[in-house]
Length: 193
Image (cartoon, rainbow, N blue to C red; front, side, top):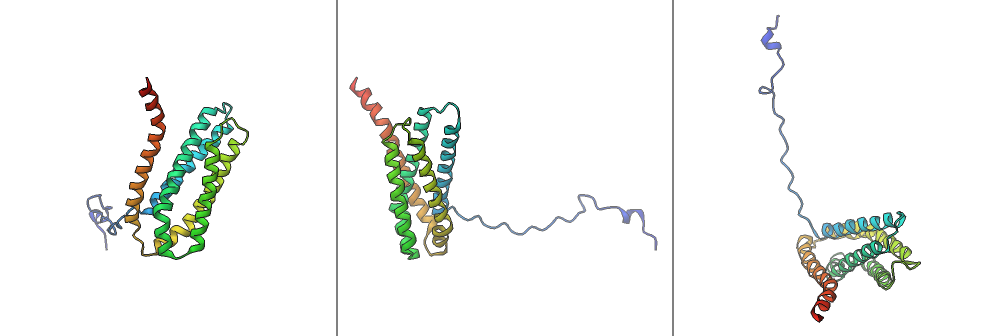
């Protein structure tokens, strides 16, 4: 049985069957854990920038001070929204007091280092070491939040999307207050003249 030339032709683009695609999964809304983890990633980048600066030849103390201040501000705001909003809700939802108590103690240690860093000059001998150790504390803390706390929070019946909105609003308020603290002395100086 002979096959005609027309029958042997390969299908053209117009005659090829288009693959049937499965319906796209609905994207999961960003939740409180996503918002907090975005903060974690942003601060991690700041710590990496600081580390690069300490390894550079310039070793600019003004740049170090600026980066350390930014790290401290970000962490202070982050810790505050976790302590005021996220931790109480998660503590109630997952009923794991050991995990939540450990996170609270880790925050206290980080806040202590933040206060020390804020009270130092960037040229002080231990300044770089304290910023580095703060970064190590935060790395450990973030790992536990991601692998334990966030997993348990997502497995609970907690409204993490609603919680994200509360966290975002409070974070915006706190960041505005932090910005005002920096601008206020300049404004007061200008008013004095």
